[in-house]
Image 1 (cartoon, each protein chain N blue to C red):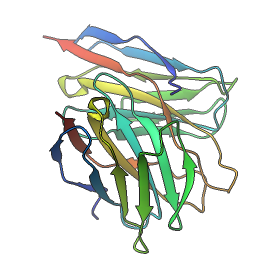
Image 2: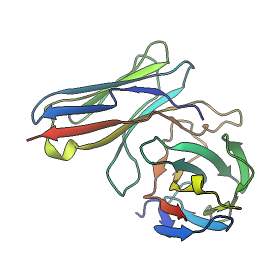
Image 3: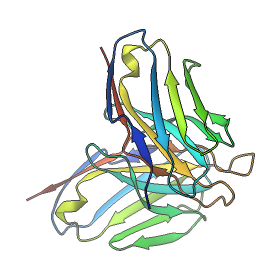
Image 4: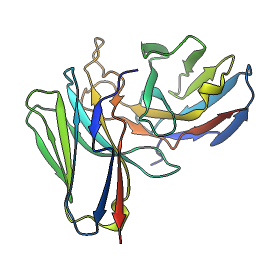
Length: 114
Length: 115
């Protein structure tokens, strides 16, 4: 039973560029959440996707956008990259339907901005 | 963004000792979770708590959901070398659409075991 998988594992970009990160949820999960984890900090919630729509959003600018596909996989897009966007980006999946379904995380994509 | 108040920030202990860490919030959560993160990996779920006052164990780990719903603690008994890592608490609220909201995390407790 595959867990949450993310790609790529590492990425280097320069300021002003755009980036797309990908996530495949754990089998049986239909909800995907994205988090940004800066060095030495806890993860910060970016947004959550369910039924191919953004259901909830954290305190992030609209340079951060996402998409969910019919197979429940998801993408995170970041435009006009800033140095401060350097972080570990984590994807978590869960099952909506029963509230008591904890989120399971992938190993993340390490994004470095030069 | 909001983060929970997690303490201590780091702990230096001897192998075999018991460990205790806690997390507090100014707002109420419906669910409290504890995760462990090793270098280069994502957080791994240790314990999930769904009811105020609930006490749940997972092997040598025990966690409690505070009565006020604004706090939680995690205890590790008889620590071993593989317990080294960063432990995060996370709170979750029930979403308006029937699902669950995104998680709010603490800054983590870095557990270091001295030989």
